[in-house]
Image (cartoon, rainbow, N blue to C red; front, side, top):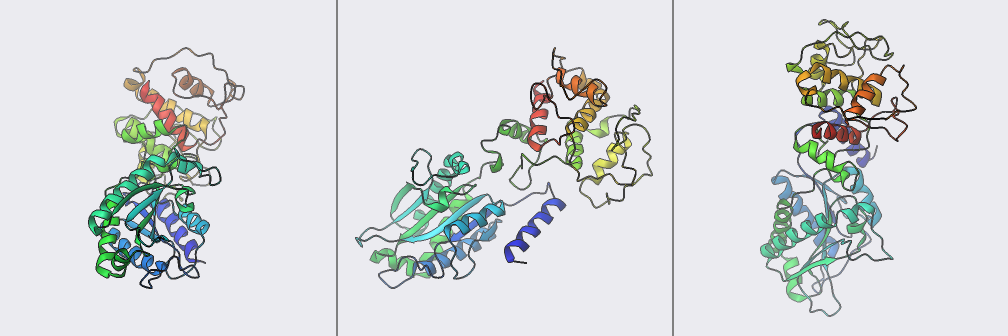
Length: 415
């Protein structure tokens, strides 16, 4: 197993084990050039790849000391293509990307520091950016400005400003990305700075402080998504959470996640069980047959959602499957969500009474009146809480996404 695969596997295991834990921002640092690509050669013989590598390691140490999670692209003097650097970064689900370089100019006189970023106001037809980077322009620019200001202050270099650029690593990713040109190897005084361990340490501290002064956008993976406004509202209300700084809007919602959301919305501890047996649900039996002694072989006490399942069981909200499982990580369907949500509304009468029953002529072709979840689906539709996939289809057996549940909860609270 490669190092990258091991890293991804460890990240996934931690994500599933602790889906709502506090997190440190994850930064990808990219030491420019390397291996067979030495980059520029300085007037003093310095190779850019060596300068970049040293400064990158110093930035890493500074950020770790500040509590950041840091991942390097190349970790030695090896060659990485530009595409490999971006592809590697995309697999990490990081919060920001910083590529570190030294500069050069044929005139031998130009000196100073600049930071490159992709700006959608200055597109280059021959070098199109990813759709994500187009959306990220203001965030990448903010990161670039903060790093530039901090770097020139710390290192005392000339400020050459921000440079909108179509450089590959700044335009093809999915997170705020910049490329830092620390100083010019082709200019005598700048090259002397880059040759000094003390000066490189100051540059590294400046870059790290600039990163620390920047706050990545909340849930980067929801930028430009149709449900982003609802997602952010529900996050600010304390209802939904992400996984690290990502929301994963198109991932199917799990049963454990849904119950957790419902507990936040309705506060299970304030509700009283209502016995309303139903034998119309084949996979899950809702009603009054749950017992305090019942346990589920796939829900150990160590599972993060075990407490909320215990609350749900005490309210007779659900039972397990016939094989003794409750399947907390299984995706939940739109029909199941509607059924349980409507049931919880009935249990929480004070909340229900605050909801207007808007007139609706909606009739879904795939929700006949005989369907076990039909009553709940139409009740919630009339209250403006849920809607169909189309005007005529609800898709009750289709799994609900994390984006759809955010939109549904947003409509509920707006109602």
